[in-house]
Length: 489
Image (tube, rainbow, N blue to C red; front, top):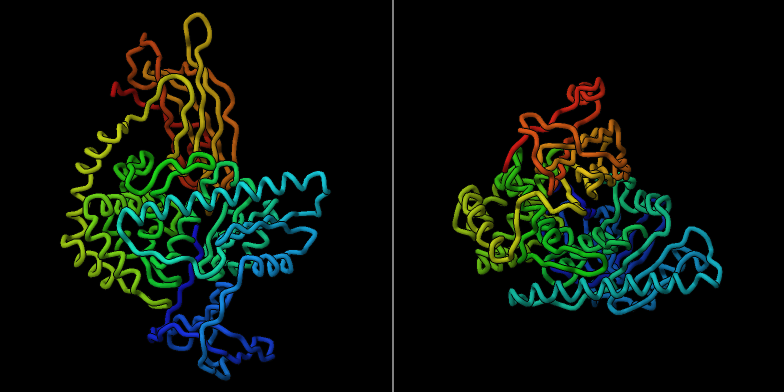
């Protein structure tokens, strides 16, 4: 997720410039700082410091302002020095690969015999950030967009333990947005830092998404704290797919997971996410909102590339701290693309089908016996099935993770075969992001309406999820679990 900041005051323009400010701090003391004034709205000023941080200061606390040159951005080495002072020399290690600074925050001091592992972790993080840079610049280069070099060192902070990550995230975000316990990582548009848990360095799925946000806001594409729609931010970030510490796809490639999700969406459509950002903040609607964000971005950048570049330029001109209302967002969108939002969405399925065929991507949610991973209804499920016994029955086991950011959920997961049989796992209360084991089971229960006698050769995963306290959740607790319905499709 990306940490944003919103205010409810009117905006007044002011060109970015370097000044010396005398500020009265909250404790009454005075401080003199060098900063660039990058945005102002009635009563507030956005001051950009030499290390890339943006501080929002009430105008009444600014006692004096002397116009001067822009503050000289600090070097990577200076950034490491400041981070070492912040986290402590005994528990902080870092490596600079300009323009990146990768830092590891340890929970306890480490002995010398483990320093090599720390170095390996930092090297892996640095290599990942350079890979993100390459694929992002390849993408914008293909669009013939001009980019800038990052003005400041781009920081990636890796926390060894989840407890330290959550404590730091809670303090840095001020409790805004999702709770720290629900976040795997985030990019802060205020501090300009990318912050992740060490556990995420295994697949880099979350770091990839957040690192794209960091690239967008530090390459001269869009200005931080400007009123960029969430659908665009998340659409471009979801376009990049990771495979371990490698990046296997970009925004021009069809994402099978999101494509299926948007075609099955029932509660959120393109009109909803273009008009406002509300759907992204709700537990029930967020999944469909992100799928719609991916689909809008992919569709526009592949079919309406010229207009997409024009629209991106409009977003890039929006100043920090401005707020766009619904009418402005819709007007900007429809004026550039020349069609109503709903009409563009109607064009999407045919364009998606054509692209999927060219890219050899199938939307049939089945796979030969073996390993299957899927994300559906707030669950990420991995399952392995094997043939056992003389009859060749399928036996499956796996694990699932609750993807809800805000609350525990009840899950009913079924592994369903093309022979009309299934196995089921009921998990009545799974905490956000908790991983649960799915014990080994034979897929021998009969699906409703199945003809019987069919041979199992493939399987698929079906996920149902509800709030535990809902009527359906209570029915499940009483043993009234849904029975899959047979289909020969």
